[in-house]
Image (cartoon, rainbow, N blue to C red; front, side, top):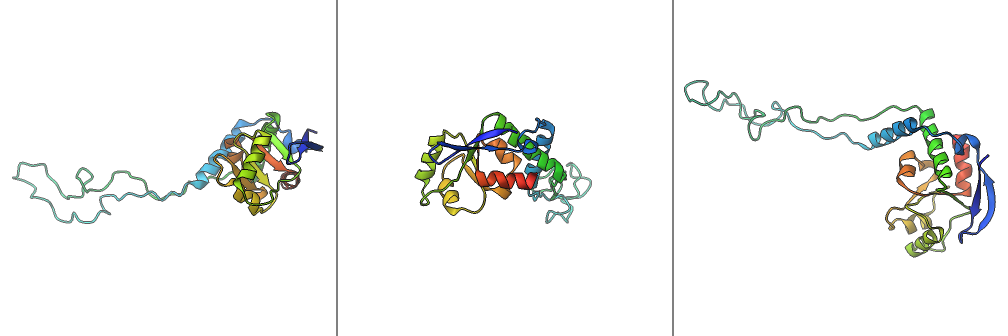
Amino acid sequence: MPTVDIFDMNRQVVGQMELRDDIFDVPANSHVVHEVVLYQLAKRRRGTAKTKGRSEVSGGGKKPWRQKGTGRARAGTSRSPLWRGGGTIHGPQPRSYEMRVPKKVRRLALKVVLSQKLREQALVVVDQLSFPEIKTKNFFSWMQRFELRKPLVVIAGKDEVVEKSARNIPNVKVLRCEGLNVFDMLKHGNVVLTKDTVSKIEESLG
C-alpha cells in the first residue's frame, strides 16, 4: 500500500496515511486517459454553429437576367454560393458531439491519473484546509509555503471561504470532491487533497 505524509497548514508533517492500491497504485494507461479527455472536451462543445445554404438565404427568387443573348454566364439565382450574399456550400450544421465512454473506463482513467500524480510526487495531502476569512492573500501565502505549482485543490464539500479566496489567483482551481475529473488533474501541476477528500475518493472509486 502506498503511504503519504499528511501536512498541516504550516507544512508540518502531522501523520501518515495509507492509500488503497486499487486507486493510487494503478499502472499507466495512456489510451484510457486520452479517451476520457476527448470525452470531456467533446461534452463541452455546444455544436450550435450554423450557416445557411442557398435554399435558406432570403431573396434570389427572380432570375437575374435572361438565359441567352446577354453575353454573360447563365445565372438562375442571385443566391448562388458563387455570388456575394449567396448561400454557403457544405457549411457547419447543428450537431451533437457527444461521445459514449463506459463508467468503468472513466473511473479507471481517474485512478490512472491519481496514481501518476502520486508517483511524480505531485500529490499533496493536508489534514484540513481552512482560513479565518475570505482573503486571497491568505490562500496565496499558503500556496507559497507549500511551493505549489498551478495547484488543483480538491475539497470534501462546499467551503465558500476556500473557494472565494482562490478564485482570483491565476492557474489555481478549487473543486469539490464530486467534480474531480481527469482533464483538470492533467492541466494542473499539483493536486492537493484533504484527508476527508481522500476518504470520499476511495469510497466512490473503490
